[in-house]
Amino acid sequence: MAHALVLIASPNGAASVSRAMLDRYLARRKVRFPDETLTIRDLTLPENALPNLSAEFITAMFLPPDARTPEQARELDVSDQLVGEFQAADTLIVATPIHNYTVPTPLKAWIDHVSRPGMTFAYIDGKRQGLAHARSAVFLLSSGGIYTSGPQEVEDFLAPYLRHMMVFFGIPDVTVLRAEGVAWDAPFAIAQAEAQIDAAI
Ligand SMILES: Cc1cc2nc3c(=O)[nH]c(=O)nc-3n(C[C@H](O)[C@H](O)[C@H](O)COP(=O)(O)O)c2cc1C
Image 1 (cartoon, rainbow, N blue to C red):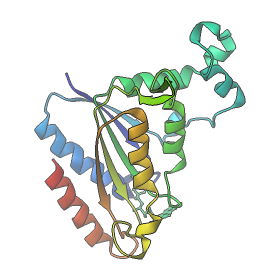
Image 2 (image 1 turned 60 degrees about the vertical axis):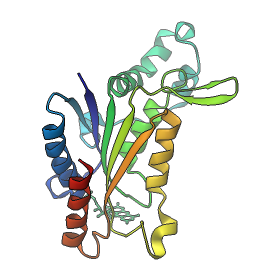
Image 3 (image 1 turned 180 degrees about the horizontal axis):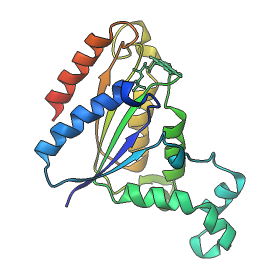
Image 4 (image 1 turned 180 degrees about the vertical axis):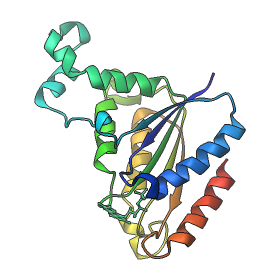
């Protein structure tokens, strides 16, 4: 049965534009794929807070599993769990705002924890290879500014970064749906996003 991992990165709770986009997207996805199961990970919940990568974590992740001390293995426990969740998914769905031109901290921490050599990527004969199981990813992005056209186009770091991370993980099919210009005209930005979602699924 198809399975999707859903990540939420907005701290804005019920007022969040990206969460509202996600609600609409998931409702439509449920109609299209009624049997698909979901794991929903709200990265902003205190119980899901992820630590920054430590020196011990980095040492441990580059050691083969059987060479790790029990302490080193424990360093990787949370990361192992997140990688397991990621690798169980056929599709990755991410709802996130832009924060300071890039990914919000909790989403960056998730990326750091699932970027594991030998598990989600590898260098084989000097060539990078993505090892993610998922074949598709959907990003629901909200931003104060407009980045797909106009003067801020050159400042669009988030979508290219997320697309690149999917290349890194080996996920070929990437869709980006956006509510843009929320700071200028929120109802218009949301209406545009809703139209994109409805056209996408
Ligand atoms: C801390 C913070 C930083 C932000 N940085 C940017 C930014 O760099 N560029 C931008 O276009 N909007 C920025 N915004 C605006 C949000 O991206 C925008 O309000 C978005 O719709 C919020 O989505 P959400 O309601 O799902 O959290 C920022 C908002 C916050 C709270």
